[in-house]
Image (tube, rainbow, N blue to C red; front, top):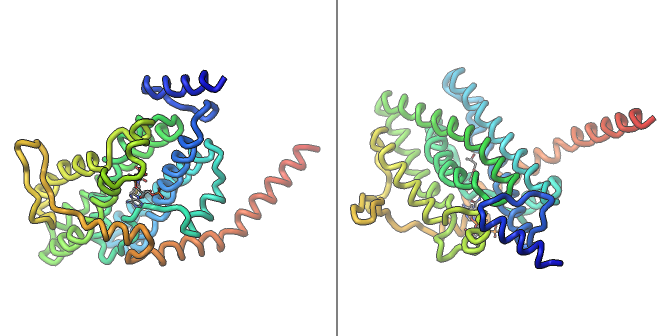
Length: 311
Ligand code: 3HC
């Protein structure tokens, strides 16, 4: 009877145990997991574009090799997450169609341009740093395949963050022009990095339910605060200033206070009106179409293999 499976599901969540693909789960749990995992995967795939643009223009072979490895990791994270979504019955080709047609989202942060090579370092430091803040708790997410995917992704993400910070350290020991390049990139990426964590809890559609189902283990604002507290000393060590005059340590709270985020900017970027939204989707669509022949050839080859194996 339904109450048996529902009670089992509730107990699994209560005991911090994992929901696995073949377990019964509420329909809305399934759809919200597909929504979050798919959009996370889309973010990884689209995230290859901003920094990928610098692979051919990296200033040294070492920087090129590091950037190549990082962008390849992002692709792998995306494919890993599409596989996790497929355990819930989602179809990868359908998810790609939803991304290209705008019916599914990807992280707002990738709709900003990367105008200098310092952006690659700042993306590693701030964007991958924010991603780590968001993804470490997801290793304890209630849906098994997602939590396990996060464990591996977080290990690679910390390499991404460290290589970015190390690059910025080098630039900050360089010429005044290089130091200015870093500060300019920090000024452009700081607020969009805070927006990555989503709208404030009071305006968040899904946070309450996602916390109840232990999909999320902390709210958007809690993770945003954790990121600010973690990043301020790193900025000081780097010798850059964060572009927020209201940013200061609050002894009572034991956290940093920071200025008001421009939520209208996040709404605009999420609704498709950011600096690079059209370009990011156009590049993804073109890659999908240009790659159609490879998918057809692989499918034909697999069919022939199955056919000969069947004989
Ligand atoms: N960009 C785009 N859309 C966003 C967003 C952002 N920064 N923040 C929120 N949204 C969307 C949500 O998807 C939701 O829309 P939907 O119902 O159509 O999905 C709506 O705004 C309301 O937001 P909520 O806070 O209610 O939604 P969530 O509970 O899903 O929280 C989230 C948003 C914090 C992004 C959560 O989905 C999450 O933790 N996702 C997994 C992590 C993730 O996707 N990270 C992407 C970062 S990039 C990355 O990891 C790549 C790295 O290698 C650099």
